[in-house]
Image 1 (tube, rainbow, N blue to C red):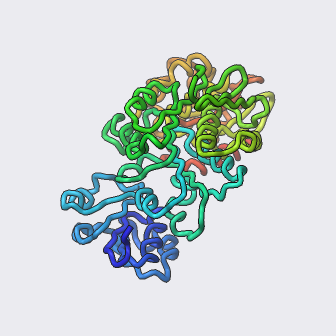
Image 2: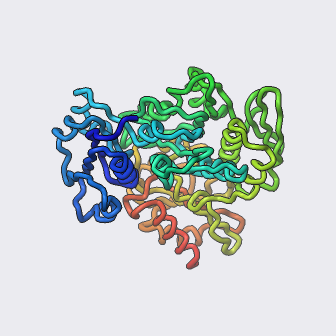
Image 3: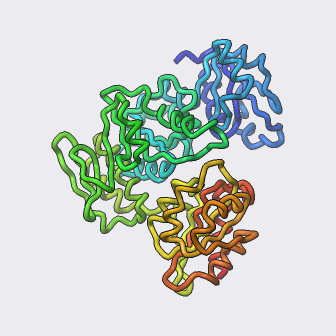
Length: 446
């Protein structure tokens, strides 16, 4: 890709934008960065660009700068309908996302993971499997390290594994993973997209440049995923925890079975530390990606046996008076909470936060069947109470700490208290990690 002496604009200075600006400047581009935040607010990010000749346009987006650019690189947090972006697109300027830029500059085979839920766990498991198989493996994307840093590192990588969000897929043109996985689809980010279909369409773009030589690992049990998978060009490789497959990977009677081109491998699940039905799906998806890309079955299974839960995803906190407490702060949408509720019975559910625009109706059967007490917090509490409150014993709490105290009072021994919000955290907390830490502290204080 020709970068040297090009006028390149980087829009948005979060971690991804900083990494892109640094990479492009190091390759001889004339780089400008633009962000609506002030120099004071961006002090940390700007410090990372020290030593590079990079122009700044802060607290504004100048349309003229967009129109004067040879290439515009858009950070994931920047909406597609930003007026200067729309003007640049109309004027024929090339606009790409960070993953598109990175994919043009890297040679390693890429396994890309998307879906509404389970992306981070699946990506992390897959990275661990590759490393245990002896591959020099880059793990990043939407988690931790931007994909562009793989290109910037000047190292030779055997394999790249990336979590990919719908936002990152919005401005791709040639991005093509060797293996792409779509774990599931449920309503999310409707505060960003005009409707659910627009969100689905963004997710499906992970497959759009694949050929018949590539693989699409898809959830056979998710009707929406399977419906859209039928029109893909890549070779379909389904995973299922509900039905046996002649080609694919499935769970049955305590065993995960992988079948591909007449070859079969079996993995008993009894000793796997990672619990929960959602993690069974994550493990199958990661295993499929790994084996399709040449990992050895024995080393793959060893890596899975050693893997434990990531922080803030169905994390066991402690047991108090016979009640088990779990923190699932990363469950910021309905689909994620569905998986959590499927993993327990006799639940006291603490939910609520900043409403993301989707319906809570899919939770109704599980709330009715498994949730003994529902405690609601945050801005979404009123709407959640309207949609779910009549299905079980429902309470409101002013703070998360109040919710923990109430849960301790009303949950009988043998029950489970689960904080799985189905909402983002920004109404009451800095992020989902702060929400998790506050919950854990309150539980430990009981």
